Amino acid sequence: MASFMLTPVEKGIMRCQHTGAFTHEEIRALASFLDDYRGKLLIDLSGTTGEECARHIHNFRPMMPTAAIFGAAIDPAILAVPESYYLHEVRCFETEGEALAWLRNQ
Image (cartoon, rainbow, N blue to C red; front, side, top):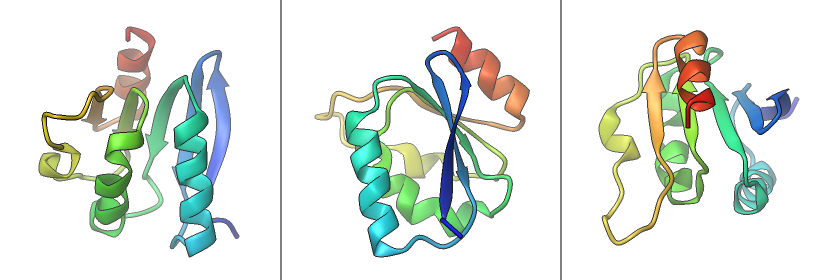
């Protein structure tokens, strides 16, 4: 089974659902997707813990489009990056509804 699934939510918003441990090939596939994708991203961590994803979220953060994360407690420091980067906003939310409402208004 893949470590993540990408599914459309609505026009301009894709859901990236974490489903398991990442392989090296899957990390490359996700990096390629993030490099090419120009929409908004709803990141669903409900099947995992924040600690399990922390390193990957931190590493992918400079590549992320406007994104809303929900489903697991994430340390806000993980989302911090040097101010020299031009980055899209990424926020954490407790529920999917809150995350989607925020994304729709971006």
